[in-house]
Image 1 (cartoon, protein in one colour):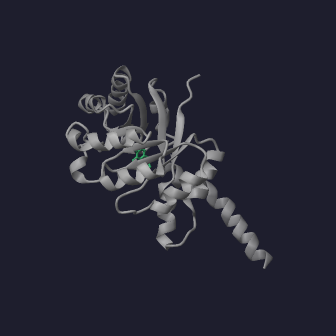
Image 2 (tube, protein in one colour):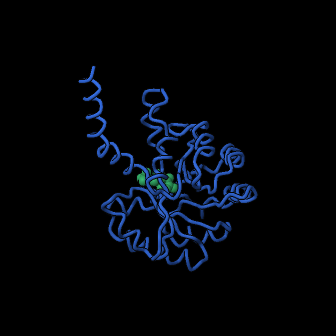
Image 3 (cartoon, protein in one colour):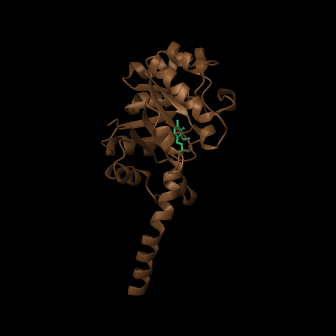
Length: 236
Ligand code: PXP
């Protein structure tokens, strides 16, 4: 049986923590819980504006989690330096600014080849496995091949939003990428309801899922934590 790796993105644990400015809930604890529950890796996005994950989170998760770490990052000199110092297992280059995004939401690798080449080279030199977060479009896959990355992560956002024809585009993109020698990952907007069709694409080796899991963790976890708080109050 083909086993697809599951990367759990813990960014939004940091979103909740940052809403109060303290240290709870700690994304490191969430990463450890996810791995204990069967996640194959932890994904985190250190954004240029540090709106969720912060530099110290990356350092603590890198030091405290034995599973592979996948750092999502913008193609900037600052992020390259951080990645080279942290040495995660993998780095996925994602768009953060409007000019870097295609209409579908993936990285415009085809339009930014000159900018991306030195970032890809710098990551590769540090022994980091590089992927590009792209739309399942032939021109983006061709650009990934030209850039020499080993992995592409296909953007499933348009599929998750229910746009017609997107599942077929993902299937065709995955087949083309694999036939071009690329390992195929996928992610964005995946839920219990829509993950199955993507997981069934034969070339998909890894899925990265975050927001839905964290939202569902709140809903599934709330009864237990309310019961425990009720018991603590009642015991006083
Ligand atoms: N893959 C990449 C490259 C991402 O940037 C993200 C976060 O947007 C995800 C996967 C996970 O998406 P989501 O949080 O919607 O599951």
